[in-house]
Length: 292
Image 1 (cartoon, rainbow, N blue to C red):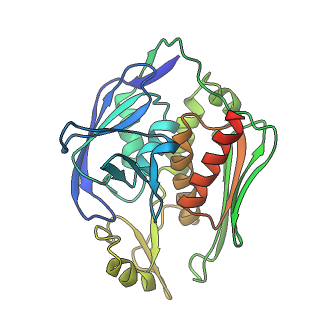
Image 2 (cartoon, rainbow, N blue to C red):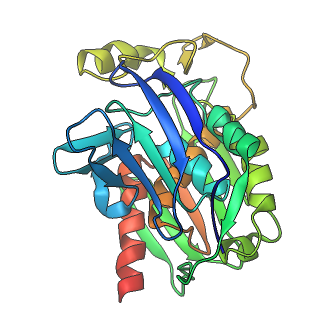
């Protein structure tokens, strides 16, 4: 069985990097169609599939594109759809970037839980990638890897030269039945665990980097309302939702990027000081290995 939304979801907000206000309408879609974006503001309403092959930029967010059309900062929304059990969704957007909302995936995940899902009989098997050997991608001391495992698990480490963040590690598994979840047999634990443990974690940045990023044409839509900002003396906009909210947000980004595989691999994905670029490189390696 596959699943789609029981009814549509609507959200409006500002994009983190573009600063442009966009409206997103997520609609149910037929079995086997997958998750995909539709740029309804462009001629011929081009479709952009939420797939690894469509990634065309990974600078401080993940961008998908097809032809001249693109959509940026897709990771929070896609993480929510995938973990909440939505296999098929038509994501209509009237601009170039998914709204950041409060900087987390909480509003997306809550909206999906509110409308619920409907089952879709399908003749297509869900592709389950069970790793038989480790896959590593590294750059300097940063790395991301996928290890053979009996369950789906994500572990992340970060290390910042700022006292309020420092070195943080967090490991998240959707639950004891996560192997069954990967097979499409049960999604309850995955959704509930994501809603409480990962979705509320907000994006964050360092105060001394903000001016440089803005001069580079980035984070035009960032504010203290949609991102945590950390300075030498601590957080400018506390309180945090978790003591280790930054590293939990990195897991959110990782989950969103790996959702581009269609289904999560049955593996322990371990990352340290990684980036969207390394996440996507790992996803590409997983596909290459699966294709033999």
